[in-house]
Each structure stands twice: as C-alpha cells, then as structure tokens.
Length: 475
Image (cartoon, rainbow, N blue to C red; front, side):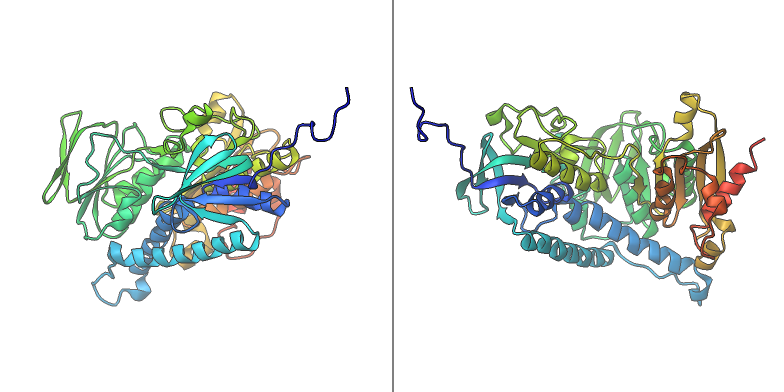
C-alpha cells in the first residue's frame, strides 16, 4: 500500500505560535522572548492598558506612593528646612497624582515593547475552549476565538476577599481599591501585616495618619532575618503605630462614619478607614480551566514543572498564578524561561536559588541568602559583620541615619551566606553583595570587600565596614 502525500497527517495550523494571557511581568517576559525568537505571538489583556496588576494596582503605584512619602519625611526631618514649627503635609490624594504619572510612563514604555516586537494585543477576557483555543470576550460582550500551538497563563493575582467582608462599603478597601481613596482618613486599621500591609502602614503613618496594624501571626514578616524584622517593628512602634499580633477578625462592621473591627480575642477597634491586606488569590477562576481539565487549588494557583509547563503539555504558567516567590522580579525571569522552554523544547537556564527580597516600607528592608535562624538550624558555623548607617558619612550627609547592613559569612571559608539590610535604599544596596555571592571558584569571599576601594562617601562603603567588623570577631 502506497502512502500518498495527502494521506499523511497534516500539522494543525493555528492563528499564532503562542498566546500569552496577561501582560504583567510574567506575560511580558514570555511574550518578548517568544517574539524575539521569531514566533508569531499575541497577548490577551482584559484591562484597557498593558502592564497587569503590577503596573496598575500593585508594585508600581505602591512604590511610587512610598517614594513620595519618604521624601516628605526626609524634608520634614532635615534641619535646613525647619524655618518654623509647621510641618509640610501632603494628602493621600496628592501623592496619588505622582503615582498616576508613573503608571502612565510605565504603560507607554511597555506598550512600545509590544508594538516594536509585533506582538498583537487583544483586549478582553480569555476563556479556554480547548487546549489550543481561547475565547476572547470583548468589553462590548462580543466574542471570538483565537488558536495557538502554545499558551502561557500569566494572569497574576488579586487581593483575597473573604465573603463575609462587605467590600462595597465606602470605607472598606483592599490593596487594589485603596488607590481610589478619595477622603482623607485620620485613622486607618490595616488588617494583615505581610509585605503589602506593612508597606501601606508606612505610607499612611508617614502622612500623619494614625495606624493600627493587625497581624494574624506572632511577629512581623517572619520570613525575614529576625533582627531585621525586629528593627522594622521597633521603627513602627517608635513612629507611634499600634501593632496587634496574633489576632483574627470575627466581624468587620461597616458604619456610616467608619469601620469597627471585632477580633476573636474580644477586642474592638474603630477607625474611619479600613484596609484588608491579608492574602492574595490567583486569577484563574475566569479561565474555564475545566474545559482543559487543568486543576487549580483553593488559592487559584496552578502547578507547573521545572519548565513552567502545566499538566497540559502545550500550556505553561508563570508569575503570581503559580505561587512562590510571587515577586515581579522573578515573574519576568519565569516568563523568559517559559518562552525558552517553548522555543527550545528544554530549559538550559533556571531561576537563581537565592532570590533577593525587597520590602518597600519606610525604611526599606532587603535580603538575599540565608537568615541567622536558618544557619543556626542547619548548624553551619557562621559569623556576623555589621555596619550601622549612622556611622557612614554618606548617611550623615543625607540625614538617613536609620538602618544597618548585616553580612553573614562562614567562619572557616569566609563565604558570604546571607545579606540583610534595613534602611533607605536597602533594596539597591543588597545587590552589591549579591553580585559577590554569585561568584564561583572562591570568588565569593568576605575579603573582597576588605580589599576593594569604594567611592567615598557612599552607602556601598557599608560593605567594607561590615566586612572588617566581621573579621574582627574571628579568633
């Protein structure tokens, strides 16, 4: 029997080689890698502009707000400008204007990436029809289908909303809707003392708002090095903030002039504004995952393998929708790696083991590598080198004396095991040490900082001070 060309199985034809659902950091990373690899790529975005939650409601606006408040605090604390007893004040609405300007610039920049790389943007809600077909529901309700050989889910996450909390109340907000705050609160209760809760606690306290921070755990940011998180706790307390640890709500009661928080411990608190910032949920419920028999957990997250491939071979997922580490910085890399897996069929690269964490409180916190608690548990012989910012000339000049740098290193090999920083520009400072930690063949060594000449005066000089401090502890 002869096999004719017509009887051979033809390879299916699709509208695109790949479709990316979502244009946040993970979606952008995937779309750009695929497009630069010569693939025909489309992206589906339900919002009117690209950028995802990171640009419009999360990382960018919150950090822009934090920057404005931090500069306000610096101004008010600088003796050069204290010509009278009046402090300069800003309202939340005023600093929102700066954040809005930053968002516009980010959208314009990122829209240019898609345009230059010929990635077609489809506006609308995406739903799976089958493993290669997506239904796009436009804002006017019209629908059409798109097909692709591969699909990347990069839909991000949204604030968790317990069903018993009335988020339609005019004084009850989550971390997305807080950006529409129109009135000027004198007192705010923030429920949830994770990264988002602590950052907004800093912002509102810096604006002179009375802040009650309710923590469901027994300490702030327990995943951080204990000394660093304790420094933040003390700074919050010293600024006049009230922190209640180990509390759970029983009822959140919206009233005409504010909100009453009823705690399971029997306590009651009242404020004219309430921010619920306790957890996030993956944006998968609208994707119709049952059509492709792809499961998500109770938090809306999907499982992936080391190539960011789901249980469906041609469907990948990156960013917040796969859970840890849930960082914009990591999502960009995950997107690129998923794109590489699609293009090459395998994955040469991987996320680095020690992903830096930056927490944009006032002051900032940042870390990379192991904490003291982890090293102690693992019985690794380490020593500590410290540099106090108040001893650095640059910090004295800038009047940013609060903070310190801590280096954890192996007593025998002098290998740097962890870097922890608390203070202004901490998220920038930590990368200097990270670069040395990544060196191989003996390059990761505390002596690098001793034998390197730093610009003077700089905040980077803290590394030399901390290294010498640590070496002086050895015997």
